[in-house]
Image (tube, rainbow, N blue to C red; front, side, top):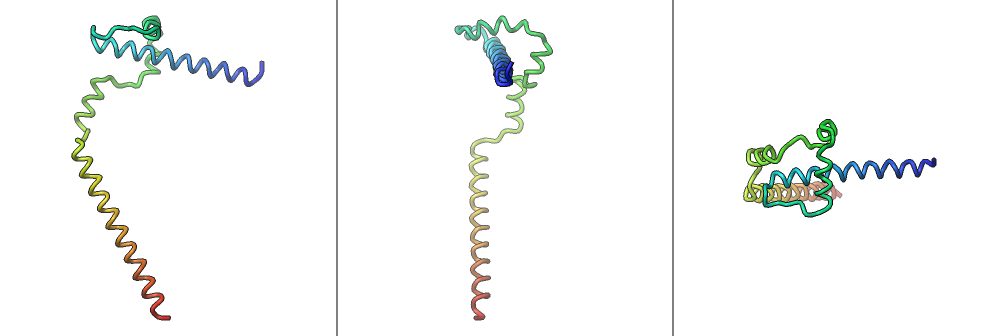
Length: 117
């Protein structure tokens, strides 16, 4: 068997594993969403079959955090849009001031260097 064919088969297997993981994640999200979300596509129907996958495989593919944990982290450490806006504004003023000081230093250096000639 050629190396290219072997590599292509390996890549196909990796893509299939990724799709199976995505199907499981979608099915899990639909279960957390409640009864109003119903599986309508063939991919979500396959996800129900993939739920029987070994727990070790699911654990290795999982991100390690649940939706509730993410919400708690965002609420605890997240910043509001107004805070971000003021931080960006301050940063722009600081960069502008640094650029003006640098420009003044370069002009002063050129003035004192070329003045003596």
